[in-house]
Length: 294
Image (cartoon, rainbow, N blue to C red; front, top):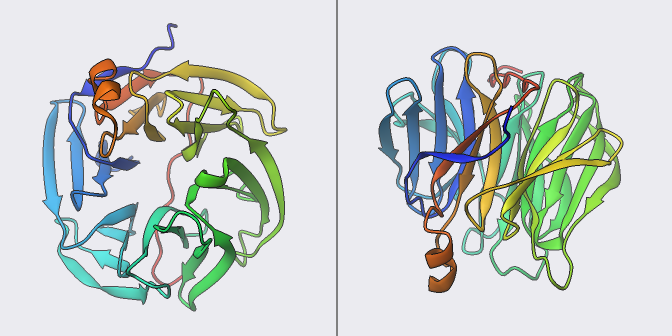
């Protein structure tokens, strides 16, 4: 099997993010943060449907019974399947002039774990939160850009990155309570010649973590013990996040960005902003559904 990322949707997203496969309807959802959109892509027909929201949407999760939980600038919201706001679950507790929700994922028990981004890029005002029926709980703070939220197959390890600090962490995670403890550095990135840094990620059935390297032009796969197993070039300088999809969960989708990128870079990587796919030998994990009563 040739492992090559190819464009499946030549789509110039400004900041494509949060690809999310729905097993129920065999569709891929993803967002364009800067254009305030949720997209639904049908790989069987190539059709793309777009829902526009009144503010930036950093992440989404599928909800039991239909619709989405979404991390917006103002907070966490419940949305109908067509994107109509159903109600706010929790306000963003940070300064919304410089903070918005970014990457997030539903945990194995049905809670939502999502973080924020510090748009000053220097003060460390961002945090990682867990949302459940008891409300919003801070799991980590002092971050620049919260990203990369994913869980091991047994739900007992939480992966999480601080992109602008070029660091990917793991936590011991308790699926019964949602407690995240014992933060450890899993991998560090970047050098004088390589500015690639960990953005969104996903975990496969072997427990390996896949991460898109923003400004690194590639996706990497790591063993649970932290060994780099493989890396795969992406025809865009800024891949943003990966997600497994397809009927067998062996199609790896990868979003990308073009907003704010230099003209010479876009000339070299004209597919920046596109949605890419690559077939894998190992399957990914089906994404859990958010349970509002959890």
